[in-house]
Length: 292
Ligand SMILES: [Zn+2]
Image (cartoon, rainbow, N blue to C red):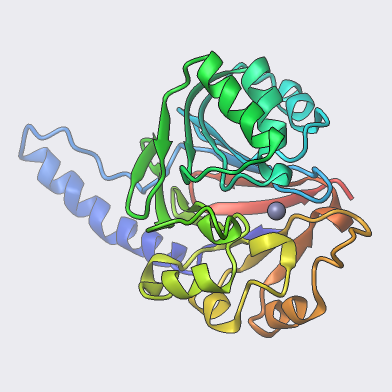
């Protein structure tokens, strides 16, 4: 399915009106500036990788690539990235220390060269988390404790800004989740990890930071998350739920699906659609492709 940004026509209108004026100006100056639409000439791909009951999202831009979570340690993500012929990953985010998000990152750190790691900087007693820290240490990968307001450039027209956490606690790891607002040309994504209502309420203090075209639905579609006010603030055209077929938690929960339907977003699910890949051409038009 092809989506067009509603204000694309406004861009064309501006281009149609402004370009002739710029050419006229250009004719009588030595200025070599040319009017270019944000993201023009840049192509991006976002992979919501089917890792069963867990999260793994891979973002490709012309300059940098980024992996947000790595699913379980069953080799799925490594195999997927090898299929894309990836050798170097600029940024890896471990949204929070639960195994369904970071266990697969351990293999990723062994198999690929990684530029830097971002996570909430909270500790967890699990063996998986100890293994994750040990391999970051082993390869001496630069580490940042991600906090709201931090920004990273991904390419000329792509960047990421964190909208959560402010003050994460190791006593509630889901609510410590890194939440990243990613801008790819004119298309925006909100990647929420397993953030629950408490975290959503904090983010709702600045709802203008949340609006996004594509939402990675929080906590695998659990009813602990995706309250109506939060969904309305994000107002996504497309929502992606990463969960496993017949998972033991009953994700996605029916009330969440009802709320998503109520805001009129298209729903994609890894348990039903397999891998979900979004391609963005010239930074404006995007298409959603699925395995099934
Ligand atoms: Zn999870």
